[in-house]
Length: 134
Image (cartoon, rainbow, N blue to C red; front, side):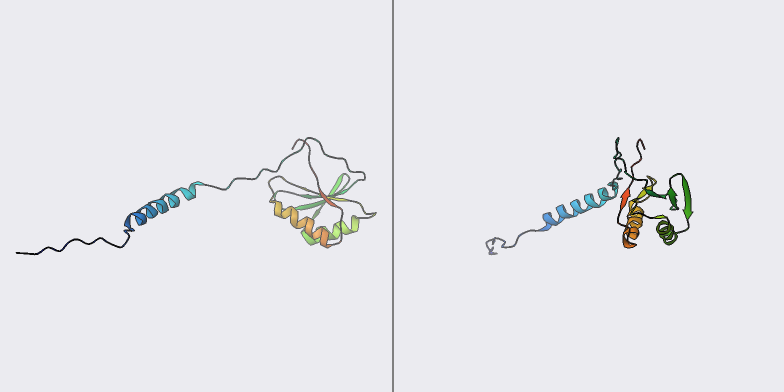
């Protein structure tokens, strides 16, 4: 007659179900991750802005990246950022403020780059303008 051995308890944990759950979660996250796109940041607009006490020198940056320097009503184009700085230095006198106006579709890093270069050139009164109703 065959003698049967008594069954012993397993002393190891069965991890196969945990691996299955982790693989299912991995597939779910991999499938849903491309569906989430980063949001677009809208720069806020204001209804009322404070008035400047003296006529500032205005730097305009268009959507295509072209620079313009305006003094009152006239605007002059600058070929690049170095030419813009040279034009600003020749027109700036009496510690007049410089304001930077940029097109709404332009990257904000371009505006910061211009303001940073103006600060490096020793122009300390630099501000950003707000167009009302834009």
